[in-house]
Length: 271
Length: 271
Image 1 (cartoon, rainbow over the protein chains, first blue to last red):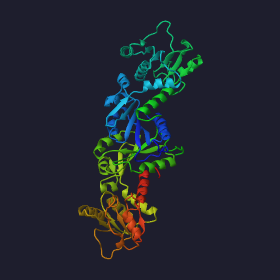
Image 2 (cartoon, each protein chain N blue to C red):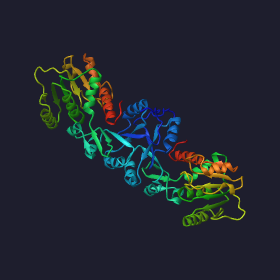
Image 3 (tube, each protein chain N blue to C red):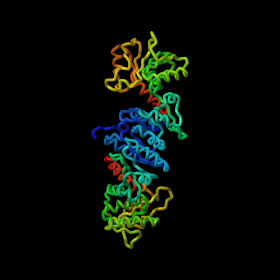
Image 4 (tube, chains in turn red, green):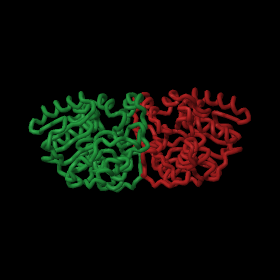
């Protein structure tokens, strides 16, 4: 685009994006995307859309009628419900039964995908960590964790150990991934003598004060990268403990920025 | 408010306003309101919402579910449909069966009113024209014209002549207004020897090239103010003709700005 649009200089032709969630006040997509739109001179805006869990079906039906609405970022608690309402979804979304972005196609259909996993890998690479050939241990295989496991397999990790107290969903994911990626070695428990290149927290532990650590970095060799996907605080108790025990750490903000870049690309923009 | 928010610096706490219409690209509310929000440091944004005529009911149902949506400006072709969907409307809206603004009340109900007429009078006063005691001739008593007639009566004009080829709606409005404002002299035809302080075009004539003039300023004394509510072009063929015949003119932009100020106040802001 050649025309430069100053931030906030919206008009009747402005293309609309939104982020649907509840709660909404702490979401960061408006700041990230609007800075990008302003910098690139794109006449578009991303606004927060506060939708309660029980209201997502009628809210979505109404939003879909807005002809200048081009895309939506989807956050808690709507990722699963919106997945079910879309006309078409990508493979990462199918694996986890959830989406975190949807867009209006030129023919009017709404399609979506889940960028949590790909954003995680993008964030690793941004920091110079290419996970190809890595042995990774992943704590938590809920929505975000499952998406991360898929993305790590796609990125070519050599081995991936899945840890979750919900052994049924852990084992189901194990079977799915082992079937789809026969070259990768998936495990669900400790293997004697195994050393990990990275251990990842994809559980919510660390968001609330007083949460226990998902694992203790002191038990890991100092060559192991300690990774958290919790974004607030940036240095979680897990990462602080890892720093104290002499480990390199990788915080949740990198995944968040990686995700934003991929969602922007899905929307047709370069962040 | 003390915090100053730079334009475009939206976040998850931003309050949302919209303008619903079709077509949408030429609406000016986003520029007017967002400049106001930025100047006053209000963390709010007004975005265009492109809704086709047949989609307004589901779109409205969905928009009403957005908890951070505080108000909507309503423009063509939705003014009548939205009127019918609101929980409560003001007197000007009741008279014309249409609204041009709606807001969410603290208890969750949606209320609305029609500010076309009051905005028209506000625009006159902005330019130093107080219509109290005036004799006015008004061409066109559709939605905007009827609202203007009511507002002129409320502003204390001495006489108001209503002109419209649709004699049924003209006569119905005549009866309503004469009943409500017994002190004001309403007519529907020329009275011999009558001189007007202002003659107003509230028909759409002048929006399209080649439209005939709604009336000929050459037949009016040069003391008569010639008024148009058409905003594009600002100097309509009617106003150009009036300028050529030595009349003072008052263009549609004044009504537009007056309306915007009143709608902003209805939304709880000062423009």
